[in-house]
Length: 117
Image (cartoon, rainbow, N blue to C red; front, side, top):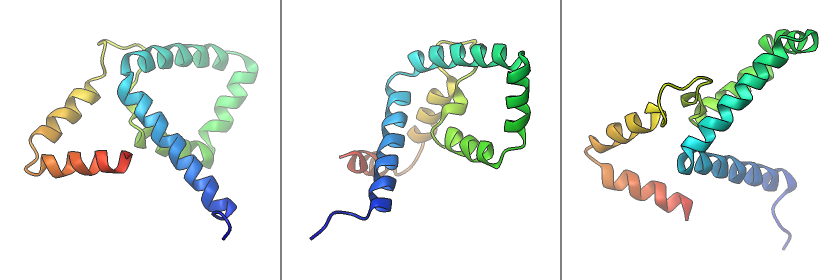
């Protein structure tokens, strides 16, 4: 019997990559915040150049950029900001509190950990 089709294998690898990225965000939010702030500052400096201004304009009208934004938000990366006013993004605390008040918290947590096994 042969292995999975190339497209299925590619999608599985991408899914694993996104899950790993999500895991890094959750395990190391302070480091991610620092890296994000540095990258955002670098991006703003680049946008001030002629080439950067062209890229910014192209991105603003790009369907691909809209799709990247969807991935970005789905992973929770919208919680990170260029100039943080707090060490840990409140996104994490908000999520913990929303989960804590659920009636079926234990099944939710079990399903999350079962998916990661």
